[in-house]
Length: 76
Image 1 (cartoon, rainbow, N blue to C red):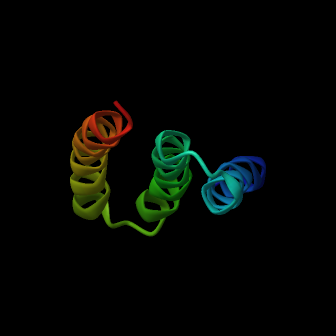
Image 2: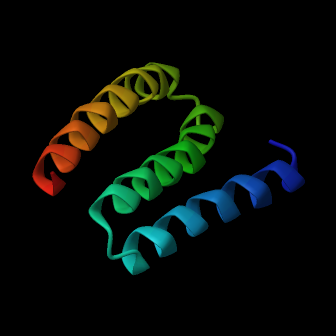
């Protein structure tokens, strides 16, 4: 993987982790967790685990949508 891309994806993952830890709003926290997953998936692909990357790429957005619906329901 190109070094610039590694740094960029690492920063995205780090930004997602820090924002997940610092944000108090549960809705924003779930969105930050999605950013964290988006930063980690390229590293999984780089290691050659394409089946794991496909599974994470399919499962993470669906779970995020369901969690956002639950969080939204609790806030109302």
